[in-house]
Length: 89
Image (cartoon, rainbow, N blue to C red; front, side, top):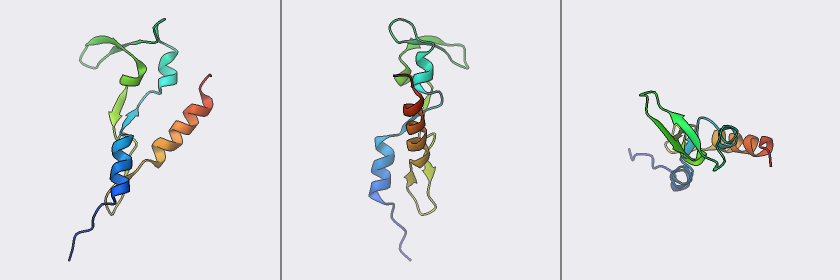
């Protein structure tokens, strides 16, 4: 029996938008300095300053894996819409 192939669109879609934030960028900006940078303390005790785009995120954190292979970004897209609607302009 041939193996099921992953849909190329799912793979491309997931690769395009793979870095998902645990803490939204808009929330991080509330704690940012005048240069829009936040100070981060890691679980290992390392302290560094970076921009919110690069912090508190993990690859495919909200990607839902599909039973037939591939994945969907429905959760990430929904959270992005909520964040966009609730963020201060």
